[in-house]
Image 1 (cartoon, rainbow over the protein chains, first blue to last red):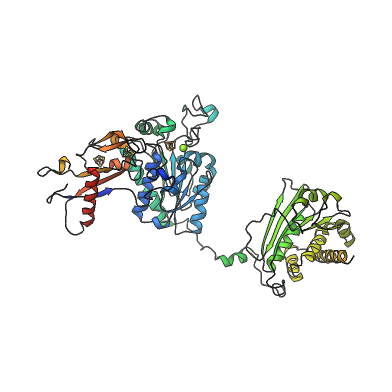
Image 2 (tube, rainbow over the protein chains, first blue to last red):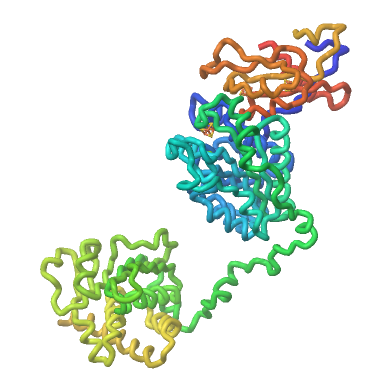
Length: 488
Length: 104
Ligand code: SF4
Ligand code: SF4
Ligand code: SF4
Ligand SMILES: [Mg+2]
């Protein structure tokens, strides 16, 4: 106990505020991280948390976690957290940073995640100079999955996939991420550090803090690679693993600063956008889809209050105008003030082959553009009918391009309008207008859209006036066909 | 009461507190400590790990062990503050924590 005359003790190093006090991952382990004893991940976590504390940015930090041993960042860091798909942290971090520029975004990735499956992601994020901070924990192996070789595995190093040691002739050489990325023009700061001894550890802490500060100052992309012990997979004691970082790994992966443009950046700021981001309301105009409400659209759209949730599947051969039919329908829905989605789905063939599309029109926000159980199926040929007829909802409709509806496709609760639409279109002067004849029938059956909206949609999507005129006649013909079928 | 706290003896500049529930016994702090004042316990903790223990004297408060330790809160390092007076209130709390830890 200190006596009266004794000095007092104050904490100088203790758990960072940016960590949770306990971890809710498992009831019995809430005092402990999931890392193995002596794992470098824990040390790097502490450096990041300390840097966040020191820079006072805990409230606006968003951590993007990886797949691998580092996956549980969200259990440990008391900041905003997102966990990205394998290798995709740089893309996720980009999106977060761009949509919330005031946030401080940290990508945390291991070497399997960043340098293998995510190699393209990190390359392009760095090349775009995203104003994010990436902490790259390199332990030269896939750890979580049990020790497979990574791009960073040393030549001669044994792993479950290189049982005789990595052979440069068959597996190539260790990938030097810092060296690669520092050939790019955009990154602001790239440094490789290690956890091999006390001196290295202090330097690593400084580098991580600096990389985060760069972002706070808006200087651009910073990446710190940390050579980090994995005692478990390396089959070493924690102390041996630490020495291996310094004695062996460091010989392959040179420590140091590979790129530092923070000074010039602070002055020139040449990567900052010259024009401010556009307002959301402005996007339709910029994309050329701005629309003044034309007279007659929304007012007479449909009975006010009527629920609309039209799910349509349109299928046929390529070249039959399947996608255009869907587009006109969706565009007209948009014109009428509805929520719409249009999702094309086609095979690899650029010509012929089959294609189909999903269209939804609703008064409410659309959750998914997929139409698994359509209310209306437009089948432009028999194979398409047979592919989708079972999926049509009971009480729904099939509009089928054929003289006879196949008997084995008929069932109770399925309404059918089967006509030789291609021939009927041919009579109008153009076989290829069959899609619009079928659309006319669909519009007449469902009655959800005013003619004015259809007209506007056609005017927007069909540039050739001859075709607009033809399509108008085709639509009218389709409407008549349905009315005729009811009278008959 | 540690040796260093005995009246008449020079106080250590630092003090170390190790949370036996969080420590995993990796030994990195033992390796890192310049004056070598950390050792490994014989008994196992709740999770089955031997844990690091402070020798009880000789800590300089350098903080090196904290940096080397992979666990977020296993180690707390305290340093002697020589200026009691206004603002020493939190330091006083810290003293109590440190003492409680040293006694455990
Ligand atoms: S396997 Fe390796 S990298 Fe994964 S937690 Fe254990 S020591 Fe850390
Ligand atoms: S603070 Fe420094 S002297 Fe004290 S125990 Fe830790 S490493 Fe050793
Ligand atoms: S470094 Fe941390 S976890 Fe490892 S023995 Fe020391 S206190 Fe325990
Ligand atoms: Mg790894």
